[in-house]
Amino acid sequence: MHWPTKGPANTDATIRAAVARARELSISRIIVASHRGQTAEKLLESGLEIVCVTHQVGFARPGEDEMPPEMRAKLAAAGVKLLTTTHLLAGIDRALRFKFQGVYPSEIVADALRMLGQGVKVCAEIAGMACDAGLVPPGEDVVCIAGSGTGADTACVISPAHSQHFFDLKIREIICKPRDF
Image (cartoon, rainbow, N blue to C red; front, side, top):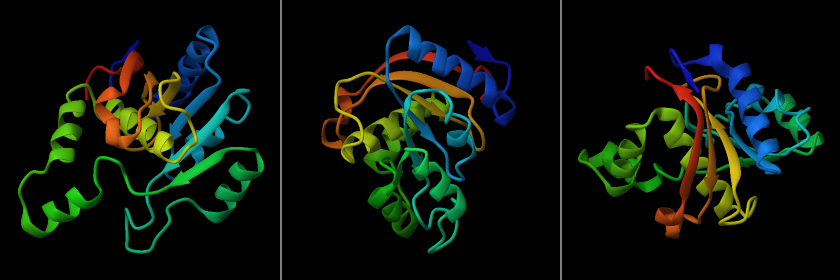
């Protein structure tokens, strides 16, 4: 499916498509990018195991966790596995870019994935992050949901890999994404 435009207006339809495809493929785990928790919250009744990958602390402002403590507590109480850590395709390479300018390997990978859309890039990234954290096993298909800023507009079926084996990660299906990104 292709949404005509990117953005949060697609969130509910993206979640419906992702959950339906997970059920069709007997996939029990869904990984969702959700920095404030609202998109993850919409999945609570899905019956799937939910891994929520947030922005790292300090992403927006030094020392700030963008997910409110009440939302973090609500999701955790519902059994959602929360992962707040350095972004796989940023980290130290981004620090080098900020300090010295230039282009660094992980940012080249990120930009190449963005050719398919920001949400596809984020889906691949959160799959690797969740795998590195031990929240999903490598090589076992998961459904990933992400967006192009706020909300969700992209869903993919991905076979995750650990970051040191990132090129073993497989984007098996793009369930939905915006056509105009």
